[in-house]
Image (cartoon, rainbow, N blue to C red; front, top):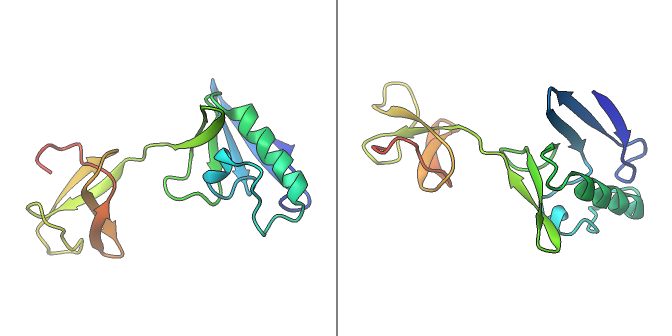
Length: 150
């Protein structure tokens, strides 16, 4: 593991690199606040104390890690958070890492995910139209269950 300075968001801002075998990951903290900043790294948030330095840092991060296979782990992106920066025409995009999720199914209907309610549990990733528990209830999610019966 090692630290690298990425100034702009706050004084002393750093990213943390981690390497294991052939894998490389970077915990980027506040260098990027939203996936759209891969497309437009010149966009700063109101939280950046030095907009010019943060723009330079974001641009450097995006250009250095695009298509490199480095797993990027931001602090503020939505679940599943981690992913890769990819070239996208003349710009860049953020591809989120697929996350295995849980879905709760009750004969094809949304089911309350609470004890005593008949349900089955399936592993899933990618796709559309199934459900998972959230605050005690199953809700629609943009993922599809791997189980064909689901």
